[in-house]
Length: 344
Image 1: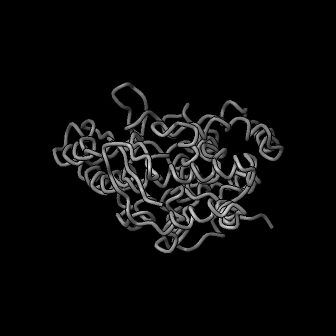
Image 2: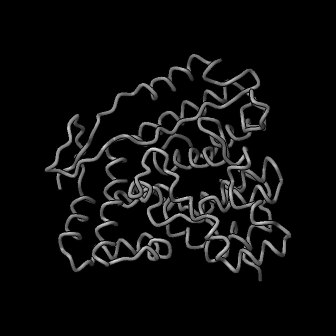
């Protein structure tokens, strides 16, 4: 009997996916159950922060869940198989701890370096390439979701990717809204031709767009907080130490689950590494500072500022709503320290 991804989910996840798309396209299942997509179950969308406080989350928000959610949003608004698959595959090359590895790669401000292996991951998959051949789909039509503006576009426009992680971070990371509120917001979204003549996701109503910004703006500061930034850098640092000491390989980062790698860290022969990890996981003091503190685990706070300025039939919400403008400005003008540190 053919497996159905949505049928295997918990009730709240099923309800969420059905909000994003009333029908779950059957063709997605074959692609979801390829080994390359299934490994994303062991990678958390909230990156290293999930593992610091796993008990506050009622479910693991995996990269696979995010990818399926993005695909369903695209399907709902386009019913285009190629665009939908491009959305499904957009994070297929994610390593364990996802954007933490961007920090290791020196890409803290853009956080896109982990997407570079997408084409290789797909072309090296006999399963996926066979399915694409069966469905008469070319590699170049699904290997880069950035060619489809409904799937992804230049920030701060609204896209399927930004919409999905904003919704679910508002459920798992900080309680901003529940599924009924998500449904009300989502049902007000439509495809709108923007000021450049390009189609993108937007809101029918200014009032609902304001509601969305009100919730989303409560998430944005978290993603540039001292705790979040230090967590990203710490996981990058501990992974680097494990790699340099030959306790893990690059292959491990792309094949093992985050839990498996954390178990390797905890059981590492080098007690300096395992002890440092244990101290970090139990640390709750994140200190902001203006000068680099060489005696502490100190990091630069120059990071990506994520936010959204969606379009409506009347124009960008920033230009037509003083309420939304204030919330966006408050975030963009938020002063943060040059550095932050923890004492391990």
